[in-house]
Image 1 (cartoon, rainbow, N blue to C red):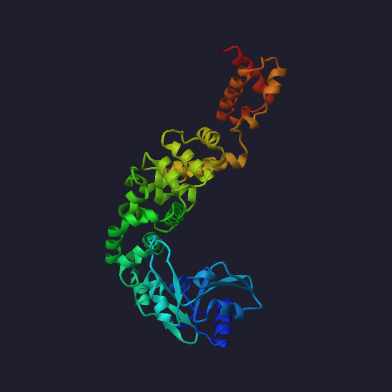
Image 2 (tube, one colour):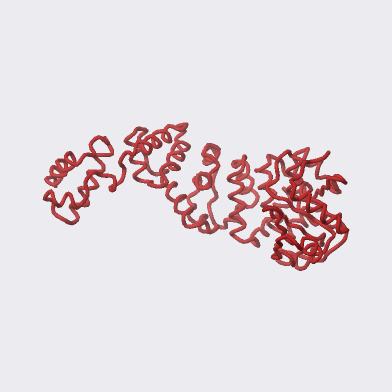
Length: 396
């Protein structure tokens, strides 16, 4: 089997080969090609040492930030290629990063240090596949299996446990029973992983084609170690998670809607203030009721402002309304109907000019005018509002 690689990795392989070195594309790009998916990026492994890689591409832009681990990033026609020397990893004292790396001339030894068999396949257009651990067979079976012993792989780098669950959700594959057992046995090691890395893996699981099974797997195997002391989301949120589109605030809110500890979980994983604020706002829909009418849609827009479209989708998911509130809210926005004080045809200054007393009364009357207009946008006319304001002034 041959693949049509992009021009840039083909050129890089040829240049390294011409300089006398072995070189293969490796890892996720090969996995994606075998699945018939165009790779987002290409990684290359080679027998060339970092300084030899740099010399081979002396006329190209290179980035040396990963050179300590043997990686040189080469920019070819705008495409970054990570080119890494074959290497062996030393121990993992912190359960996350190798204590040391040593370079080798052995491709098989380099592949042996990788996480999963489907990511331990090398390919060269002239020489075909190097697949010593059965990765192609596991891809055909839809099986996520570790290279070597799963316990060892996860103790080396605890993030691999999350990656296994994420790949399962993204690819629709199954975890090998040994992988499941090893995650259970080593779950406590996940606390060695930074909260930011856990957060990014969770987001990818939420945005995957299988967010419900992915989050269930995550909570079952690692939940108490990721969110110690928190009441974990229950299955009541699964239908909402399955309904909402793959948009981070919506999937995250749906995931958190099944727990009273949502705020603590947001804080724990250090989500951005904006994302945490939107999720917290959307979660209030659990406590607020809106009639499925145009007036109800305007009220929802008033309450959720910039988040109103996401709130409408979340409302439909919560109430099983199949897009009805979303359509109403979109109509309100498209027609430019008023749902905020700034959209009223009068303001505080105009009310004062009409004889109302400045102060708290003005604010109270403006809010009442807005409520009145949201029931019928045709009322948003200066003369009608001033007349109604005078009636409100007489109301205690």
